[in-house]
Image 1 (cartoon, rainbow, N blue to C red):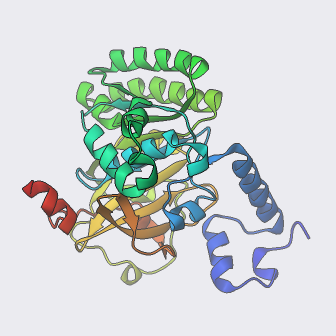
Image 2 (cartoon, rainbow, N blue to C red; image 1 turned 30 degrees about the vertical axis):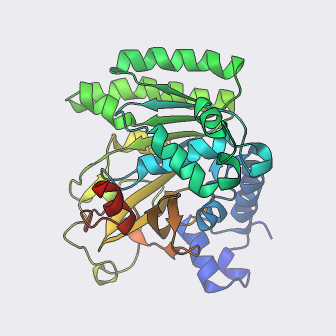
Length: 334
């Protein structure tokens, strides 16, 4: 039974195709995947409150590993991080982790005002209580290193804080800004990045908390999007996945970095609509969820998700990025 092929188990073709995309072709491989899912569930998750995404991730942002948010400027990466910070600091009876958050704000994008706005709109029963907004914001420690050496010092201090305080989430926004700002050549950049990513991974494993990092985008070189081993290659023809004029961006920081993160979420804008793409996950198929940014933060427009095929899951679009949502237009006029 263990060596029986997936296509011999009588599963619906759509389900069998998802397993095939993840290189799960035998019953034994399927059992190992189920065991991994159970282990991930026991390890814990931070729910994002985005129903479809949480279901695809089997509970939310997993503890003990690195989760990456990558996308062009202004797409919503920091908005996502602000909401996660809020959820980690919420009381347990409200679905939060009731802990402290360490937010490494490299590009000075963190906004306490916006955090409180998201909290007030999302959890009015909590944030309308006297002093609660200030208490929630006070649980988030902001660090703003200006160099890789300062960042390294921050990482060492963080390890001590994880022991002494109830830290439940670490966010680094953004890793690319630090590395790309100091190293022009690829060799020196990868060398510097190698030590830092190893230390950050050890922090995740040591602390068993979710660690979320944002990443920037850069121009794609040739068939670079096909170089990720975790991305299943498509056997479809070129006509199945037409290339549009804006599909020339990929995540920065290189392939070694891509393999270091366990979850990769790509945020993009295509034809005026924003999407969150689950581009890398050990337990979920590649999916895309349309979303908007509202006063309460990121909101999914469809919880079912759209299954992605081939290199399209790693291509990053920014078409229509200048088309702001109605909510954003109002904010810019204030």
